[in-house]
Amino acid sequence: MDTNASRPRQTDAASGTRSAGATASAPHQFSRTPAYVALGVAVVLVLGVLFGARVVSERAGDVPVPVAPLPAPLAESAECSTLLDALPDTLIGHDRAEIAEPAPAGTAAWASSSTERVTLRCGVDLPLQYTEYSQPVEIDGVNWLVVEDATPESTLATWYTLDRRPVVAVTADEAALGRADNPVGALAEPVGALPTQAHQPNPAPLSELQAAPAPEVCADLLPALPETLADAWTRTGSDQSDTAVWVNPGQEPIVLRCGVMPPPNYAAGERLTQINEIPWFEDTALVNGSTASIWYALGRSVDIAVSAPMAAASAAMVELGDVIAAETPEQ
Image 1: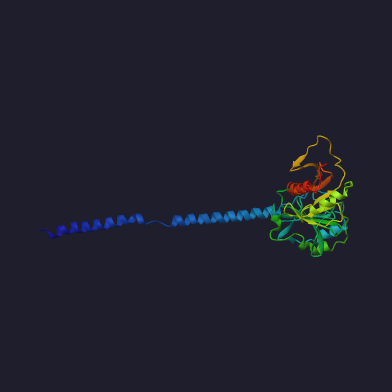
Image 2 (image 1 turned 45 degrees about the horizontal axis):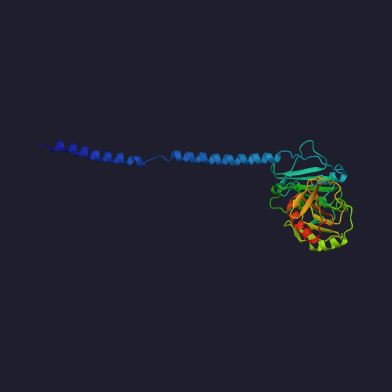
């Protein structure tokens, strides 16, 4: 037998075995290059989005801030000009911004975006909310009155100086405040440099109503009234023996006055609101950002008026009405 003839067959068998092994292992081999490319593209896209968002935010902060014109009789005074020149370039983290044209006199603004803004007005009138029942706060030597926006969904608030002339008003919302308690502490030096002057409060709610004699009924009613109304309004002292007052910082007060003349705007057929045992007549007086209405409790032996802001009226009318029904006889 030719021994050399079997070798090629063995070699072919060995070769076949090796080829089969190589073919079987091929599916487990892959290239990592496409995965690296895809990862790199994803990282670039994320960085691009972050960079683009930052650019958009910075550009939004650079846009001039619109400020609506409001009555400001002293806006062009020398004191306001001096104040504007002394204002800081940065306020609670926001850079000084331009005012959109036409820019009202006596105004300044700071902004980081279209929603994070603080505006200042110099030379304005004090709001109608400033009365003897107001709750001013002293911040770094300056007395301020805080008035929150009457719109329920708004977080805007305005700080008014009560002891400086001209009057300064600073407006900001929660987004602009961030972690700051207020926007005016950093303005203590330039605002505090304005001339000091006390301002006469506006007439208190219900104080201008004509009184009607009812001493005995009111003497029983007022001590029975609750210490708290609408969860957040707390009773405070009043110089008037026929009046009870509840206050909530930043909000308008709730005021009850017992023994007034019948509502001058009421006539037969007027719409009444029945709340438990009391029919109420609402005489609206929504002016200058105020949401307070005057409510008259009808059908009792004495006419009783209540001034309540919109945020507290629904709860306050129920709570007060129950006490009025219990403490005053029907007409």
